[in-house]
Length: 375
Ligand SMILES: NC(=O)c1ccc[n+]([C@@H]2O[C@H](COP(=O)([O-])OP(=O)(O)OC[C@H]3O[C@@H](n4cnc5c(N)ncnc54)[C@H](OP(=O)(O)O)[C@@H]3O)[C@@H](O)[C@H]2O)c1
Image (cartoon, rainbow, N blue to C red; front, top):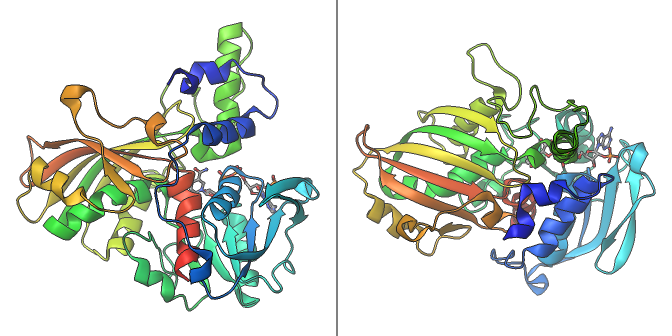
């Protein structure tokens, strides 16, 4: 679909383009809501829900998911920084004004979806939890804490019901997308280790990431100076093998999330993971190339059969006919797509596969709303 090409987006106007793009991509893609939405009648009562970071890439998507899935909301409160106070956003035909986030924001709120970054979660999450509100947090602030469940509803839904600290964590987006493909195979063949490389979209860095790619493409094609604030290198017409900061062992924090979070979600303390995370000049949807090693012998045919009927993951694997998933296929959609499934030629009991998913939606907003639906 030509409308989705990066360059055609890049040639659009500059101001507020990032937010427009996210909305445009969402509106354009029709087949988005394949996961089952909630029947409001099945929920016992209407909830007072807050979105913290409501003006951001993930916060905006959360509002859309809540509306599209008929989440039983009596009242929606939108919270962001002082800069955004008073801005309005539509929800179910009404305009809701954003309020400034303070420690007193949570009285009467039952569920707070946090997506304003780790430091905001650290500072305000405990206040919300102490006010009796269940916090569903998108940042990495609490993911590895004991007593904080780390939940992908298709994989470990029961964990969401045990949240003694009133905090539930949403996993890292690349981890969610990878595990959507790996968990069904793990159930059948026993996962032992993962070697992966990710191809991560700029919207993973929020609205600023899109703006930086946009500006650089425009500057290069018009002979103007490049601006570089978000990424360590030029992102336009380039790829950058760095997502998040480097740690002492040479891996980035993002790469280690797949290891630690994968172990916690799958309850596999001995799972081995080696990962290289790469930022690519794609607007939205992360792709991951995975080599997975299993306890039991596995074939591509057996793996394909496992995906039949699984929620949230669709097989898209017929390379002879040009069928394999790409980021534009999943943008704005709920389901992750898996393809390029083949026998690994080096390791025993190992498969190679390619999984793609919308990291703003299944990697963040949708996953959080699905968790709220479990409560
Ligand atoms: N983008 C993704 O694909 C993705 C995927 C998974 C997880 N996440 C996580 O989700 C979180 C949000 O990411 P994002 O991409 O949506 O970022 P973003 O587009 O930059 O949005 C950040 C949001 O945080 C708010 N905020 C910033 N400072 C604040 C403050 N002092 N008080 C209250 N609100 C404040 C912003 O409000 P203002 O507009 O008022 O500044 C905005 O609503 C991050 O923790 C990120 O790691 C993101």
